Image (cartoon, rainbow, N blue to C red; front, side, top):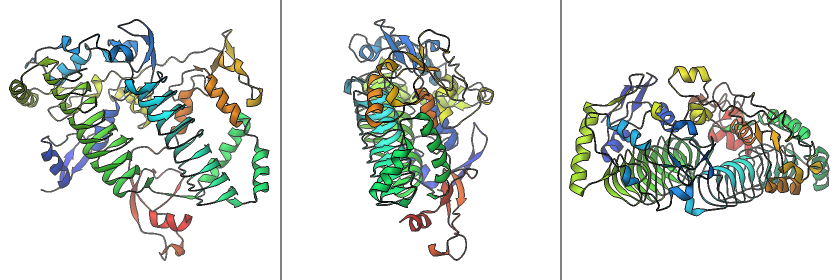
Length: 582
């Protein structure tokens, strides 16, 4: 078996399928892909709405709710208590297979008829955490997305095993952290990036095992350092005290300064720890995992992304969740003891042998079904015997080769392809925009939908309220009014225009003397996301010139990195980076 070059159906660029890829495809009995890896990821992301939430009412009980599905989708949407209840039966929506119609289209038509859950979650594991999405095992959490095992955390994404944290992105085992990105095992770490095992650290980057540091970069086992300068305890406390983090104006000035300082120091080409034989970025405690992004505890995987809290094995082209799962392929939001899942969306809780299905819980041997719980041998939500199921499934797969779904741009979807982007209920700026930025006109030219968020303008309402500059001048009245986002809907993000401060949020800021942000939660998230590298790899050379690092002239090491060539960071190979910072 040799490497094979193919041309992507979507972007028309060439891509390669390696011998080990064919081994995997043969193992799970699927066809090799016709889309390149990047276009496959974008296609899955187009069905993944993490942050775009809409107000609507439950179509069963009539109560107000928030949902990832806007009213404009026309879908029947149930609130979490109703969807997870036994008061309705998704088998009532079963239909016969029609060999005259593309099977993928029949599955999506079924999806548009069967009631769907308003938010993605393991709802039975949530305590007082209704306003969260893509979550499980939360207590007293608010506006968290893609997060698990947290308590009293708000306004964050990809937060795992953390407590009392507000406004963060990619935390694990952290407590009392604020406005930090990609930090692990940290306590009281504020406005920091890529830190580990740190405590009482402010505006710092790539620090490990540090305490009481401010504006520092690439430090190890340090205490009382100010912009990498060693100080006494008294000197350090005096300098930090003079900066007054109670004022939002002061914080903006500090952020602007430290971000310039950060770029004067080298960065390692990849974010990883306790991993071997890997490629991609943000890969932890993994091995033999390639071209993957934001992955924890993975083994023998390729083209996988957003795999937390971890435990994924022997999987390709998988996105989101993956907890204790094996043999996943072209699947999205799958996990919790799942096995052999392909071309499916949201399959959880000991499910196995599932293909072309959506919203499946605790079931096995399903093909093209939606919303089923604890079922077996069903196709399009119709019950069959084991033998009938096997025979019909085989016939459908053959028909998918003869009568594929063809989208508006002529791309063919035979057996082996994930659901087409154009059939997704979501718009591009609700899904893939965060990772693959496109202007509205370009996205529409490529055939993607675009959602008009119509940001609220509350400037002239009698209920508008302006936050005081200093947190000590802010009282409980701030929680009673709608606040206007400083961007006022004029930014490139899905700005919500207006937002509110919660009592828990206000208490957190007052307890720690931190000024309240004047941006809405969505704009705050997108600002943090600017510091997270995108899931795109570039071939680059180490830029180290130091002769003390084992090379006579410039380092010759070549690597793949998510740091784009036009970015300002100084990017080193691992050897040069370790010699620089340790």
